[in-house]
Length: 290
Image 1 (tube, rainbow, N blue to C red):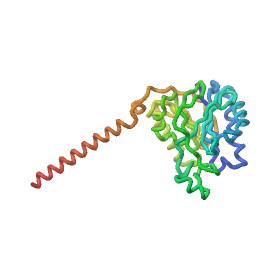
Image 2: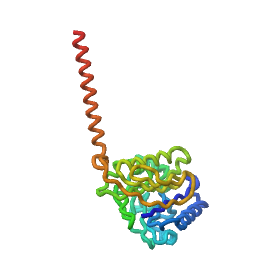
Image 3: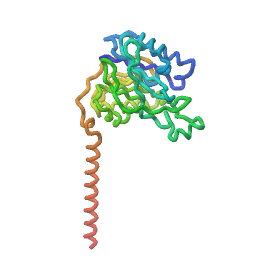
C-alpha cells in the first residue's frame, strides 16, 4: 500500500482567518493532486480539522477532494455537528468517488482545549476550550475503534493527543493493521511540542509493534515503522506531501498483550524487597540497642 501524507502548513493564527482559509484549502488539494514519483497512492491522509467545511455541508468539498485524489481513498480531519447540535472533532473516510463511508469522532478530548471542565458553568459566560468551536465545546465520541479504509484498512484512527495514551490503543477489540495519526500541532509553533508529539507516536509504534503514519498540519508528518524508526518525514514548518509504502506490522508485543501489568508487578516486588530490607535494618538496630 502507498499512502500520501499531506502537510498544508497552516499556522494557527492564520488557519481560520477568512482570507486564508481558501489558501490552505487549495494548497491541500494541490498537494493531493501532485503527480506521484512512484506508485500512485492508495490512500491520502489529511491532518486534523483540515477540511474547511462541516461534514453536513461538505459535499462540494468532497467532490473536489475526490477529483484531486483520483482512485485513492481519503481520510481527512473535519468538524461536524451531530443530530443534537453537539460539535465533534472527527475524521472522515472517503471512498473513491467522494462518498463518506465512515466517520470517527475523537473521544479523548483535551481539557481546557476542546472542552472546559464544569463546561455548563463556563458556557454561561461564553467560555469554551481554546480549540473548541466558537459556539460550543466539543463532545467526545463513543470510544476507540477501527476504521475501514479500503485496501489500506483496517487502521486505528488517533486524533491529536489521543496518540499519547497507550490505553486507547489497547481498548480496541481487534488489532489494527496500522495506526493513523491525524493532528494539528500548529498551536506549539516551532517549539518542542511537535517533536515531543512525534516522539510519543514513535513510542506507540514500539509498544504495539505497529507502524504509524501521521499527517500533521504544520509538521512533523512522518512514516514510522513498527520498530519506532522514522522512515521519512516532512520538516516542521514546511508545506508538502510524502508518498510512503505502508510498513509491515510486527507480531503483537508483550505490552500489547499485557499492558503495564509486568511493570506494576515488578514495582510491587521491589516495594516488598525494600520494605523487607527496611524492616531487617530496624530489627538489627533494635537488637543492637538492647
